[in-house]
Amino acid sequence: MDDRSDKLFAARLEDMTALCERDGAAQFSSFLDERQCSVAEAWCRRNAGALGYMLYGGYEDARRRILAVFPDYYAEYITEAFPMKCLTFTYRTEDKLTHRDFLGSFMAQQLKREVIGDIVVGDGIAQAFVTDVAAKLIGSSVTKIGRVGVKLTDNEPFRLENAQKFQEISGTVASLRLDCAVGLAAHLSREKAAVLIRSDKVDVNHFTVSSVSHELKEGDILSVRGCGRFVLSRIDGSTKKGRIHINLRKYI
Image (cartoon, rainbow, N blue to C red):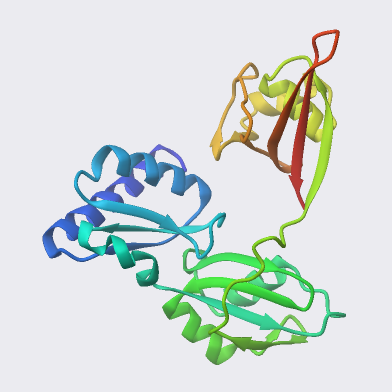
């Protein structure tokens, strides 16, 4: 988001809290991307006051989530109130479908991205979180994903939480500076990594960072344009020469 988008998003958050305070009823956003989730959480910490708030995407580690702002007395059952459904698609295991296949089929129904949450694909099964309104449209119109026939239900629990696959990348770096980690992650020299960073092509925890000397910590998420998304999953101490062992997980 640019500055203008940030201001518009903050205005939406202000509207949500104002409506919640006025009507005494929970307010829900559309699905937010990871950067919007970070912005929303920081904004709510500063501005929600006595209101409760929660970001939820259907399971613990969801990337795309809905923000709820609610009075205290909603807290006990707010999770069940989120306006979303988990859609389960089953198909032959020999038919290999991808996240892109499902998202493309949903978007072909003239649905906006903001009504679609996480889509997790396994072998012969995929599960997608969508808003209640989107679930009705998909349920009535989607019988195929691409050319593959699918069976759709909306009453099964989510069970693909561990379907995300990673490639492990281990190595040593001179320091925990951003240019060092990007070099290891993207198999680039430190100088080429620095060019990417200074060109605003690297995000740390969903925000663009242009400083090559930015210090990373365990758990940080790196997005490198054209190279993928990585998590600094482990820092394992130093070699005798003072280099640092780190482990990165690349989403695949």
